[in-house]
Length: 445
Ligand SMILES: Nc1ncnc2c1ncn2[C@@H]1O[C@H](COP(=O)(O)OP(=O)(O)OP(=O)(O)O)[C@@H](O)[C@H]1O
Ligand SMILES: [Mg+2]
Image 1 (cartoon, rainbow, N blue to C red):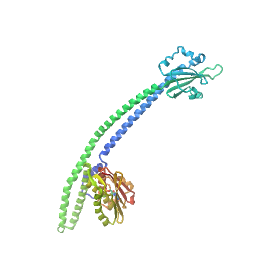
Image 2: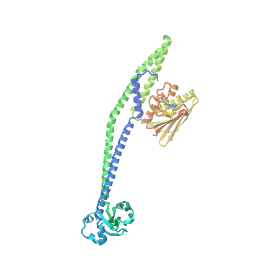
Image 3: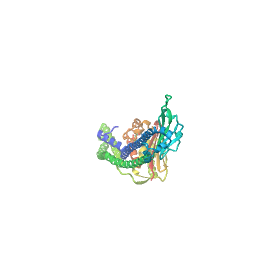
Image 4: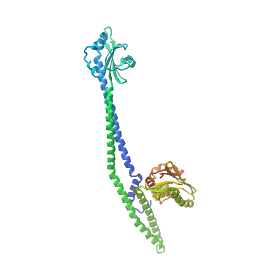
């Protein structure tokens, strides 16, 4: 790029175009959303872990109590087999348990027949319907949840005076209703939900506050850069105009100056013109970003028709087949000057990067609540790997620099900023030499 400009100005312009291109609200929303998702994720995972930890612990505690009870009752199986449930009428150490709590005990013979039982609530299922005798070959106790009851069954053996293997005396099943556990869990769930809701509410309010705090210096910095860029661009206009006028005056007296000097003056003049155009572009970009959203009701067809007429002349000069298709009665809320600039930039590109004999197709159609304006050309196209860079300020493909050396790489950056301001979308599709298709989607009024 042959520019009569100083590096600091260029870097200032580059930084600001990057910031404008990305928009200011987007990072705020992104930061807020990320913070919220992270906090809700942490709170949710902690809550769920705590919930399952509590359930596991309560169940383990219950199992432990039942196992202690059933083990304490093991010696009684022998007596019950001899005396039947009469034995239970007498004083036994764990007896009080049954009157106060939800515990129950059942004594069974080796065939699974109930010998006696004590307590208030029992599981509905007979012993061998829920446990198989073979289960006790490997385990001493079997833990089960039967409906609303938690049970532990153990097998009881007596020494065998005639052999090594002990003799199976029967089984004892201890049960307890899970009502108490469920009541604790449901209270905990309620507490967790209320606590979770309050925490999410506080996190939400906190995130808004912290995001605001974190972004305020950044937004102030960006605004400062915008103001400086706008002021610098504005102040550059006058001296550049003076340079142009002065060189033009000198050039008008060609006969009084040396041909060599005329050449130099021409270079100064062209460079001043280029700089003026760059300043205008940057100023337009900055102003697009700092002005409030447009509120004018714009009829698109006449606006586009007007613009198309000018490009028909370009098409004729360049020998390009230019076709158009416009829908009538399309209204959008926007700024007609900026919209004209948007489509001019896109059409300029289509004509600049399409060779003689090529085609440019401009169309407008309605799609649900949007209008879609599409600009297709059969020009040199954009390589797929270059697509991520085209909206970055000052990016130009090597081919574009050869075809149109005067460009700055700002046309699409400006187009993007205008589309963003109009709450629309711009989609570029190109696969190298097959030409380029650009679609602009804008919400209808
Ligand atoms: N229709 C198109 N066909 C092929 N390449 C394109 C087309 N439109 C854009 N490009 C590529 O994207 C780059 C950026 O386009 P942009 O309009 O921003 O800048 P430019 O045309 O190079 O210069 P100017 O600032 O004058 O518009 C171009 O240099 C070119 O490489
Ligand atoms: Mg361009």
